[in-house]
Image (cartoon, rainbow, N blue to C red; front, top):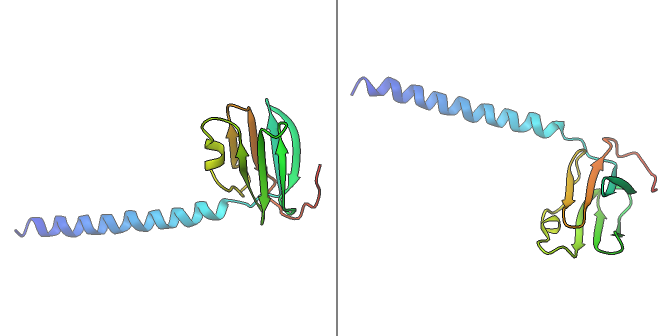
Length: 122
């Protein structure tokens, strides 16, 4: 029994160290996410629209086949006529580099710009 005791202590120390490293990584990686300032809407790999995340609104994309909603600095695919609706179920995105893709309709919605001071709509 004396042989198992040191191994048990080492296992507990290892588990605590791994958990602490995970918590530190969580905070480090979370802090790297910058809130985006605008949304770029792409259709067939071409930019079709750009909207500020500072202005709330609902916008029809691709002749109403897709609808995006911008609210409180976040964007989501509000509605889509695609069969699986994965893009709608993805939910809200707000950080630079995040995207929502509607593959059947060939629509990509990307958050871009790490500075929320942009006040323009194209």
